[in-house]
Image (cartoon, rainbow, N blue to C red; front, side, top):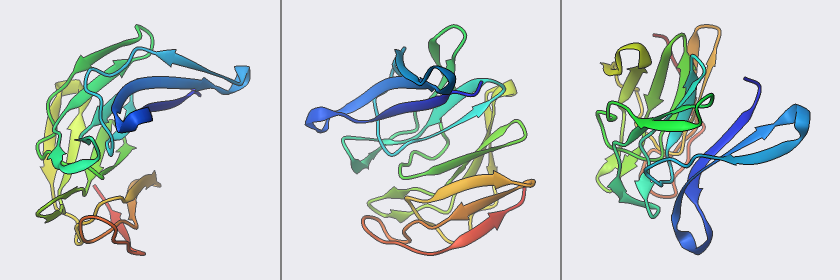
Length: 171
């Protein structure tokens, strides 16, 4: 719809927020919309068929408190609804949309980083588990380009680790 959505994170006092704010470029204005039910940080989001989906994350910045939470937002109705939970509770994840699927990559927990790749299909409200990434990592980025998803950077160890990886996922 040409607007930019910012959702969740950490607010003043280091408290999680479920706030949703939407920027309308032609009007050069931000506006508050209905908040998510589950405040969180280190989550990922993507839009499929005009709806916004927010998955995973954690509470209080603690990767020992990872979430499998998954909510869908309908901009026309300004309402949120619960969706099928993320099969693997994790935070520090990346997401990208390709076709009519939301792909979720990586993440972290105290025990290590995740190689998991899972795809959400809104039409059936279901998750599909796919071939894992070659390298597990958190704090990564993902972008769909020409039918493939580039999974970029991220740390191979929990906490403050980094990499220059660019692995390409082809569905």
